[in-house]
Length: 157
Image (cartoon, rainbow, N blue to C red; front, side, top):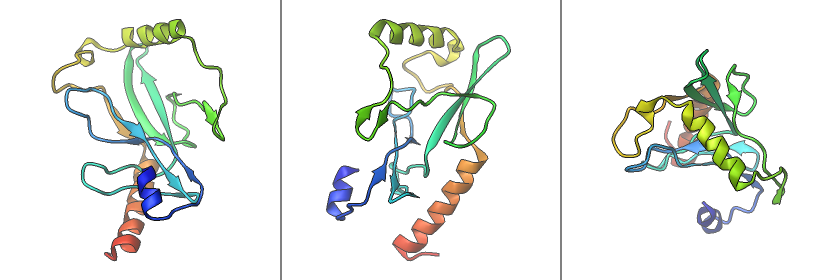
């Protein structure tokens, strides 16, 4: 992304957020990053590199027994009943939160992994994958920004 800014001489402030790409081969998790340029949602529409517009939050849902049920990726200000997972750790290029120790990270991973259904734990294979979906507000923003980008940048209607 940085090369794109340089190549197009884009010097306004940009904020990076979460976007989701296809599952990479032999991995069962998403590659995540994102962008808001000059305080307006931005996205990429290139095949295989499409991104989701806006600033995100991931909401985790559990069963009554405490097992992981699904995640919903929504806008940062969505109010969904799931547990918000993303926390601010950097601000203006500086660490803004206490960084957990390696033992704390290991414990958190093991605790969460224990809540995951066995069918989602295989490293190799083609699924099933843990259910992840997008909030209605995020889907509407995505459609709106995609129409705007297509119209402005590509001259299409």
